[in-house]
Image (tube, rainbow, N blue to C red; front, top):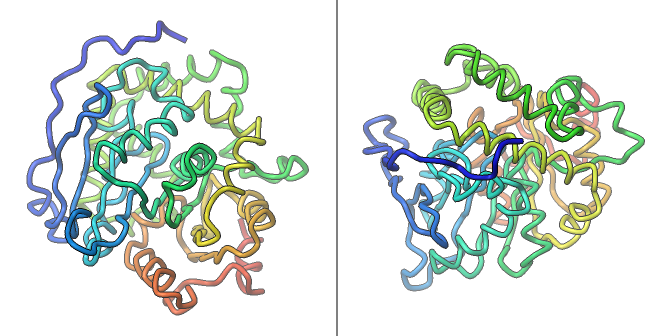
Length: 348
């Protein structure tokens, strides 16, 4: 691992008029806030928290290598009756970290309460995808009262040790080198240095989505832009290396995350794509054994990022859940408690 300092960073730039990129993104604004000396890129829209009688906002936490833009396709629709907020965590997107170690998962879990404090938010509906799901569980272990309700979207959480051999092959190939400190990060730096933008885009799409045709041209553009920022800012790959090493260590440790899952609200929704190549059935089954009362929405023909691949179904699931209706009210969604869902799960 390199010296724990981010070095010089380019001045941050907003994303400009998001409505010019997609009409669905018109209600969302790109800007920056200062959180304990870190300039954090934030996407915001919807009804403001400080409006009279406004309910808890939706706060969206992205996954490994992603950013606030991962949530753009659902923010407008979910912001019709409450505020919606997504940030680039330190070390990701447009948020340069004060030091590389600030990108570690435990550091970013501690960052979340500070971020909420800066925005004057006491409690929120927290959506966490992949690493963001892990951070949501860690936040529950640190300050459970900050989470009014939670949505775990293909969360990066431990599985039962007996199930480790059944995890998807791409998980082992991608993350096993990070078990030995320095080995995985060296390989990651080498890949990023030699890969051009097209190779990085292909690698990202191959591992995250079931069918790239489901992504809108605007979403493909911002994904490519995020990778361009990664190539242009050396702190991105160093931060990513710290984040992956810490994520693997947290998964292998297990206990802290298991306690975090136990501390999450009873009112938590689990969302998973049946074609997810990263978070497989053993993880989802294990989480459901820990919290059997949680409703589980399985989305057929969807991969690791349902909010990007199937935004209408994602919004439908969340709206149904918030209204107290069965998630099976949404077309193309199977409740995780049904035999049909079990059949889908076994296909992973």
